[in-house]
Length: 331
Image 1 (cartoon, rainbow, N blue to C red):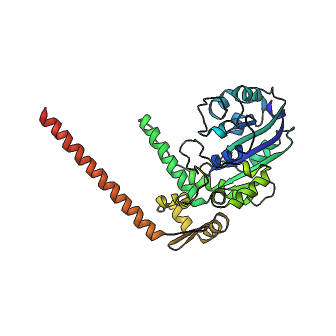
Image 2 (image 1 turned 90 degrees about the vertical axis):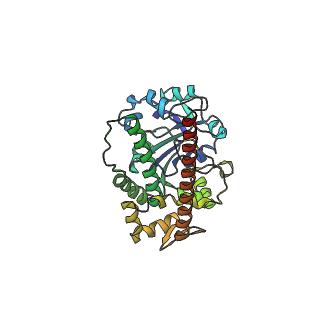
Image 3 (image 1 turned 120 degrees about the vertical axis):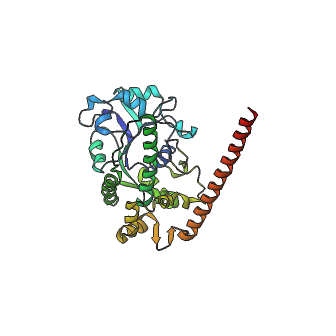
């Protein structure tokens, strides 16, 4: 099957969802030539690509949910940037690859989410003819990672309960499971066998992006920070990061959540966030590299904004009531 294809470069990526995975992937893809990138997104290794039995590759499911091509209106994902889109191969070529009919190819990117790091080694061993394999870990600070997941999951739950009246949602264990994955990934950040993409540093530090380019053997001058269209991801739209601190305040909406509260009171974790992710929480201040935020001031702004929104909502409902009563009186 396609494991026997002679690839010039294979990029295997493991990241927790909501860690800026697709911001990184789009940036990586942007450095290559048009129509040379084969890309499989959010793959379940055992279920989709026959991790323990290469003959059981689920081509139909991959094409529907995990493949991005330059000419396919795939249901699972799409890029809204033509530059990135044109880097991808044609759908016909992707089908041939999955069927094992492509002998040589330049670039393969496989994105895996929510796993322990050793999945990269297990999958990597399957590509017996690849000239170079890059194993990449995606990381983000715990405060904003967890909060982003809470937000996304609450929306998913709302949508499910709307469509299924009798649906009973169990207590979500994402906080426990994700924390275990995160610790495993964090420990391996310092292992030279892996390349680490640090979302916080990527957003804030051009030197981190340049260093990544060297480790990934790509031309930094060709890379593009873009906005990939994946569900409700919140990534850069361009290279301008004057308001970049907003990307690191998602946790504030969940400051009273037991897990976030635990993080805020755990000095060891806070030290890790500060030293390795540029996220320094000290008393009532946050320092995010060169940005400083006074939490008390931020609280006042949020409260003021909330009051204005409530006021607008009340005014709107009053106007609607007046219109409704006038309509009734005319009748």
